[in-house]
Length: 191
Image (cartoon, rainbow, N blue to C red):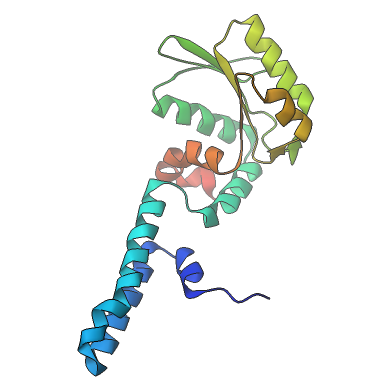
């Protein structure tokens, strides 16, 4: 197993752990050689600031897989509520769709977006659901469409979506979309 550096280990911790390490090092070095203490602690203070910025700005990479697993474990009712509420909190008007190639119609600033997320549990979404969503977007004269999956998308699905007004939403961007719900409704993210 490869050795991990102290900064890699600290990057996986809350930001304030780096600050505690900086304070401990400063105090220890201050006892033996005071002029060197600030220079030893400074990289850890800088790391704490960087880690705080990353953690407050978005979701830390450590939690992405954990949160995606929690999303996959949800029943459709909860997942659908989270997605629709996430769009509402971003200023969209959300309308649930019955049947068809998409689950929600979201509107903002006069633009309509079709959102499909019913295959969120599969490991890899193929090209057919993406094609169906694109066809529905053209029939409804929507501005664009979003296909959401907690797993991934096949190469053929990615190739089909390339250059079209289709967003394939998975991984960290999906976790970021639902992060506002995560902060206020922990019950949806507990197993």
